[in-house]
Amino acid sequence: MVMKNVLLVGAGGFAGSVARYLVALAVPFSGTGFPFATFAVNLLGSFLIGFISELALSTTLLSPEARLLLTTGFCGGFTTFSTAMYETGGLMRDGEALYASLYVAGSLAGGLACLFSGTLLAKLWQ
Image (cartoon, rainbow, N blue to C red; front, side, top):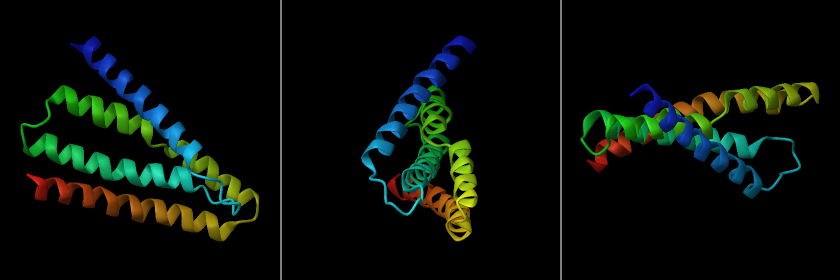
């Protein structure tokens, strides 16, 4: 059972990490230094984990294994706190304190808003 769960998390994490990389390739560099790709990935991941968790907890649409694959695995691999902090540090180092502050505040507020939006959408969808 434990090995099965490890493989589910690993497979989901692989898919999420690849998806994050593809988003980074697809989102053009803005020239402002603001990390739009990571920002978008973290907001989308927050929405997805809210949506998936609500479906898994309040319906029978997702098994515990599917929830593990999609939340811990995919969303865990897709979103990235460490990259967000690295990019925030880079903005600070480059003298972009305003962008750094907006990035952190926007990530937290936007992430929570997306989480709750995903949860609400899942409730409405049921």
